[in-house]
Image (cartoon, rainbow, N blue to C red; front, top):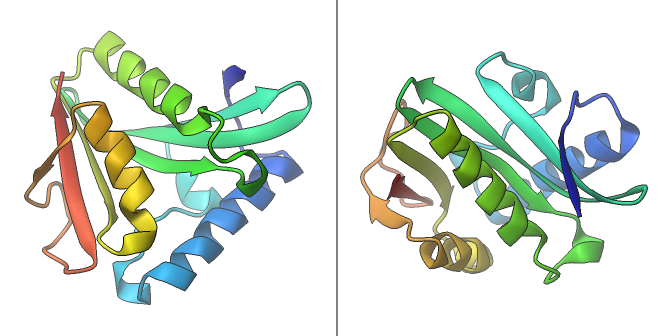
Length: 151
């Protein structure tokens, strides 16, 4: 698996982001969807990576800088054809390593509270993320859970 910074211009990445956003609409009410589309992922405070095996896109993930000591995990997604191959685990480790390299003290994330998001919550917990209160601009929402990892 090769993880690389991605400029979000490739059709494979656009398709994966569409898949990600569509999945959110199936599992969350509109007001509780915090996934970002391509245009918002191009924000300067966000670094976006794609995961490849040869010419095949396996997944993606992003790191948003909230301040010089706090980052947020965004856009974690594994292509539906590559589930349970360790793609998300590899991407999350990459994001954690980058957050440490940047000198962040904390890494936070928001994910869904519904059963469909249990695999994601389990993955994050396996890396030491713990449940916390909303951070940044998030508000309490019964459809969201918030997790944080002290680095």
